[in-house]
Amino acid sequence: MGTPALGRHSYLLPLDEATVRFDKNPEDFSPRTYSRWIDSRRKSAPGDMRTEGELGKWVRVVEMYDLVNDALLVWSPDYENGTEYVFEGVTVQVGALDPDVTLGEEVPDPELEHEKTGIPYKSASGRPIVPIVPLYFS
Image 1 (cartoon, rainbow, N blue to C red):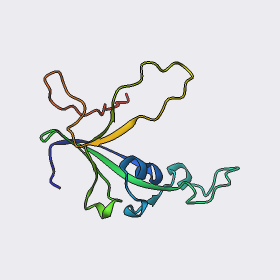
Image 2: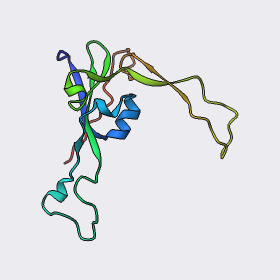
Image 3: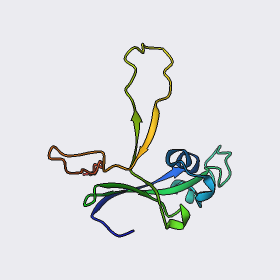
Image 4: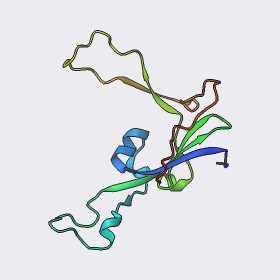
């Protein structure tokens, strides 16, 4: 894992959601507990019946957009001790949406397929674009 020219985005994801999204076993992760910074100053909020650790198990996820090699890479220090990527590429829907579906009808789940493709967002000239918009406060 080199250090390509990239944009990156880091966040925490619940363990159960990470296992579904990346199609991995929970045992492959070393989850961490999540503690809200506001609760670090007091033991519990008035009326809060939760005990510490009840916020579940979480994993840190880092999405990396390699602009040189046009690759979307997902890494986590909590997956395989940070030695492997959790996911490479994107998951896309296969087939078209059913044009005959009407409002209120039950729609079957779409068929999803994992593809090792480049960054899914491109400029008009075909160059990869990182889909992260910075937010500035003034």
